[in-house]
Image (cartoon, rainbow, N blue to C red; front, side, top):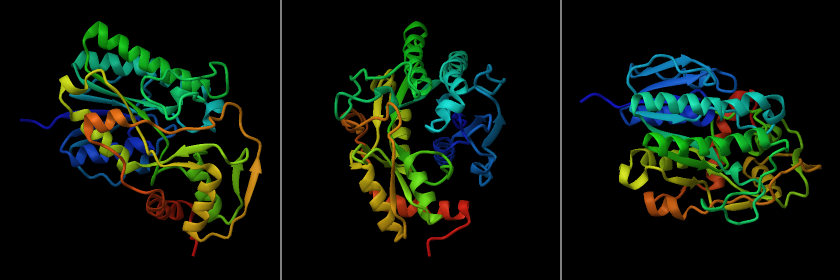
Length: 320
């Protein structure tokens, strides 16, 4: 029996490249599709397996001819808030036309599809913590809308494909995730704080720092995605699950924690809060616990320590 073949869009990205590694560890044949807009070829350079193939491709275009695929992991899209304005159209199309192309490819091959959605579909939530039944509070014309609304459309399109074509589509709503291979200039808060601390700069906190997030280390995220993808059709087809940490923390406390873990000599400065920045964000993971017996295990302090060497190497600096 041949190894299952998985196609991973965004396979050179932060989460995508770790997903590629985990699938290879699980004896998959893996094809990565990435246009290297935000994904980085060096995230895949360590892979020597003959079961891996990297194809430069933009998902906004129809997929190239590939061998039969058993799984499609649609993980392509810029996710950094700093890109929401400068790459707004690209983001909106990656999550609309790109999802259309991914689902058409899946339909052609009758492939099980795992769709990467996001906690951003909940917007600035009025329900806390956020469960999968909550429809969100999103500004459809705000600065975050190209990402937020296109991800919401991506889910709607997936549901339509599943109902009309009887495809097995599973959706993962990913909450704030961090770890090695995040770009230092990514713009999300942990890369920002680590880069600023390593460069001996003040850590920039937006607003008064009382807004909350929960941060999931990338290996914990993958430990949820893998069993969700492999679960029996009767258990998981059509399901949507939140994956993320339930360890909620204020952004100001996060800045203080990073300074403490790195023993950094950095001050904290405050800037105006961006428009539509969510006040709270924490997943209800009851469904993932029930379906997969999953919950994250890596503490924030441990995850930061695991992530630090990568940033030191990328920036060419050390906290010592």
